[in-house]
Length: 265
Image 1 (cartoon, rainbow, N blue to C red):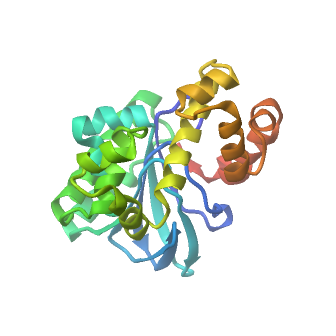
Image 2: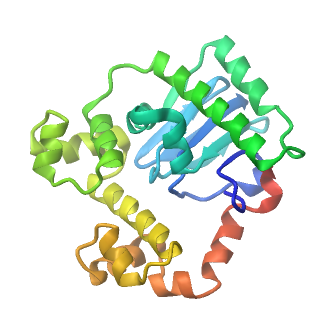
């Protein structure tokens, strides 16, 4: 997210294709032209116009192949604004299928909203317009979603209560504890442990940005110790927490992954 904005729309630009990544903000991709292939976890999704993709917080994704005429819009909200817009069932909505096929009238409505010129509008007006689009898009997902799989139910529980013990989570989703990891990996494309670690790391970054010291942030994020946090951070991000927060590395990573020139504001 650029600056203090809590809601934005990007338009796809081939020169700024990002590597495999994940983030705290939930994201929607509206495919408007051409064809492409997205990677998420161990899964490949083939997309075409009228497809709507949803990436929940912590869900890795990457555009790995696209036709010459490929085009899409990216819609993103901060987690706090998304929760407010979607209401109490927000986690369940976000954890639905990664891809849905939109009926033509709904697709036309969403596309018209994405075409709205935002550059000259005040931030609060942009936020209101994008929030309306967000609500409409997820409402459309709800009308075409099938019965959710066990893996998707586990994902909902992770977004709502990321630190539940395994047995408690199993009872919450009405499954045997031994089923959780297998179904989560099959349906989401990554391991339950890896996804839970990502959510903890995103919480760690949020806590440090809010002023917590590294040890307090690690414990608040759900890690059992700072050493456990350090190992997970270094494994996932390829650098130590202190280097990430205490040098120019973070800014360099942000500029490499999301150049300002690629944004519609």
